[in-house]
Structure formats: structure tokens, C-alpha cells
Amino acid sequence: MSRSFIFVFILSLACATERDREVERLRNQLKGTTEQKLASLGRLGQIGPDAAQALPDLEQLYRGSDLKIREQIVPVVVALDPEGKQCIPFLKEVTKDRFVHVGEMGIKGLRTVGARSEVPFLIELLGHEIPGHRAEAAHALALLLPESRIADAPLVAALKGEKEPRTRAFMQMALLRLDPADQERKKAFQALFTDKDPEARQFAVGFLQALPFDSAEKLNVLRRALKDPDMRTRRMATRISGLMGEEAAELIPLLFDIFYEKDHALSREAIRALGRVDPSGEKLLPHLGRALRSGDARVRTEAVVGLGQIASPSSLADLRRMLSDPADLVRLEAMRAIARLGPAGQPAMLDFLPNLRSPSAEVAYVAAESLGAFGPSVIDPLEPYLQSPEAPVREKAILVLGWIRAEDPRIDSWIEKFLKDPETAVQAAARQAQQNRSRGKKP
Image (tube, rainbow, N blue to C red; front, side, top):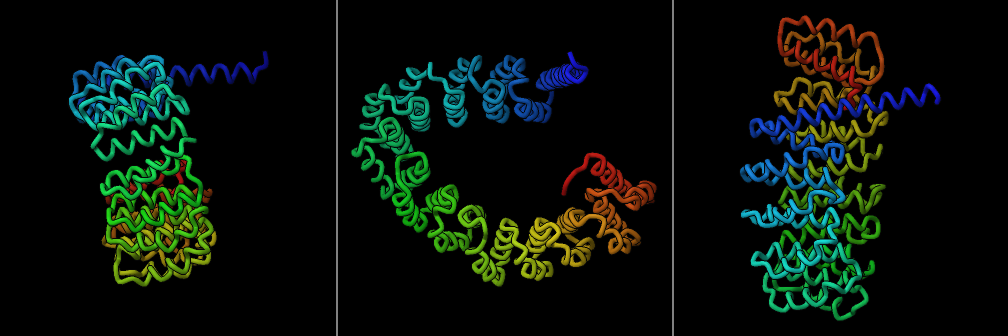
């Protein structure tokens, strides 16, 4: 047996032991305050199956907790037991939770762990009194039984008496997935795209990618849905357009109509979609350039976000101009966008420095974070800020050094100096910079 193998084996044992200790600590923390419980749940979910020994604790916690805790438990249970070897009885129990959305999470959990053994249980749920349970049961059957006819008759019977729009959409989606070649089912589903109820239209568009529609059919649906009077349907169409990627390039003008809407979340969704539809940015840049001149700060902000997403060196001049925008958020996003350009953004480095004096703590912090991306070349122009008589300016300047990844003796020298600064906030910034460098933290 080679020495290297023995070393790796011993190291893996040490890691496993350390992880077991952490899991044990987290299990004990589940008995603490609400904040401790939530923190423990989050970390257990990150560890995943290696923390499966905590499953009994989670089930016990669920039965004795309020809604805030219960709704966090189901996704963690699924993360710890993704194959459903132990958690299926618990997930079935959760479907009976008195809070509807928690009960629905139990059904989603059964779907996620691939609980094929529970098909009879899911078929029973098609007749549940709560519409959401019926909808999620149909969704689970569609994914657990692809091209299987076992659930056909129960779904057809349930659909006949179903009046709730979302649930009808889920049931018709399930029927079509179970028999993609059935043209009657396809026509029935297509009728949902023009249904009088906006909720039915919204969910029908949401299922577009998972159903047997060719590219031309999808684009026709999305072209109409992007103009739908219902905002939720437009948002869903925007998301699905992004999932289609470059295949949806002809929808760019319609997506820019969405981009200019007043709803901030919808504009951001449009920017994400546009970045996927035109990853090179060739078609987007002229549109975004015009948006930068908008009188609406929100539109300018989203345009800058779009330029950062494309990360094209050709946008540097526009982004530098936005560094002097009157709106804090525009300047903040412009700095982030330029930092993403890497070396191509170097000419803008000096433009960032005045933002270290910004009265907005967030703008000053992002300026410091972004400046670190320029490496040691920022140290010389940064010195006047490191020597500033104003503590908040020194504080942000020292943070810049912590985000520089390259080695330079001047960095450690400045950090050591500021660990003894008369201002406690500056000392704290120096400690943070020291920690960031030791961890190799990237901006």
C-alpha cells in the first residue's frame, strides 16, 4: 500500500470525523432558539446526505414547531435523503399539514425523491379538497410516470370536475406528458394558452419547455404571452424565453418591451432572459445604450446590469459615463459591471476612487470591493485615501487591500498599520482585510 494512499485515507477519515462532529453540533442546535434552529437547518441542507443521521431530529422538530420552522424543514429532509430511503412516510405526513403551502411541499418532496411506490397515494390526492394538493399530485404523477398509462383514468376523471384554473393546467400537463403522441390532449392543452383565466395561461406557458412543442410552436405561444394583459403571464413568458436561449432571438424586441415595464422584478427578469437569448450581446448593446439615456433611474440601473451581464469591453465607455450618474444604484451597478470586465476595465480604475468618499455606505463598500479586482496597480492611487484624516474613508480604503488577490509587501504593511488605528471601525476593517487575504476571498 503506497504512502500517498495511506495519507489520503487518513485525511478522508479526519474529514469524516470533523463532519460528524459538526453534524452533532447542529443536531444539538436544533434544540436552541428560533435563530439557531434556522441556522442549523440551513447548514444541514448544505451538508446533504452525510447528515442523514439528523433525519429523526428533523421529524421531531417538525411536529413541535410553528410554521416558520416547519416550512424550512421539508427541503432539508429531501436534501438529506434525496433517494427517499427513509423520509417517504414523513413526507406523506407533511401533506396533511394544516397550512396548505406546507402540505404542498410534502407532495413536491415525494416528487423530488422519486417516490414511485406512492403512486396510489398520489392518485388518491387527485380528489383532495384543496386545489393545490390536486395540482401538485398531478405534477408528481407526470414526472414519476413518464409515458405510463397507470394514472390516465384517474386524471381524466379528476379533470372533468375540476374548476380551479391552476389545477386544470397541471392535470392537462400531466395527461400530455403521460401520452405525448396524443393529438387531442395536445389540442386541449393548447387551448389553455388563450384561456379566459390568467392563472391557467400563466401555468400553461410555464410548462411549455417540458411538453412536446416544437420551436415554432413555442415561439408563437411566447410571442402572444409576452403581450398578455396579465403581468404574471408576461413574467412567465419572459422566463421561458430565456430558457430557450438563442433559439428565441426573434423575441428580443418584445423582451425589451418587458424590460421597460415599471415593475422592477419584471425588468430584471427580462435582462436575465435577454442575456441568455443573446449571450454575445451583439443585438442587445444598441438597445441597452439607448436605455442608459432614460430619464428613469430604474431603467438606467437595469441597463447597466445588462451591460455587466454581457461583459463586453466595447461597453466600457458607456459604463464609465454611468460612474457619475446622480443615482447611487446606477453608480453601484456600473462599478460592479466594470469589475467584471477584468483587465479591460483597468482604464476606469481612477474613476472608482471618489466613490470611496460616498455618503452612501453601500456605494462606498462596492467601490472598495470592485477596486480590489484591479490588483496591486490600485495601491499607489489608493494611498491618499489610506492616509485620509476621515476614518470612514480609511476604513473603505483598507478593505480594498483585502480584496487584492496578488502578493505585494505593501498590502501587509498597510494592514498592520491600521490594526493599530485610533478608530475602532478602521481596526475592524483591517482585521476583515487580513481575513479576506488569508482566505483568498474574491471580490
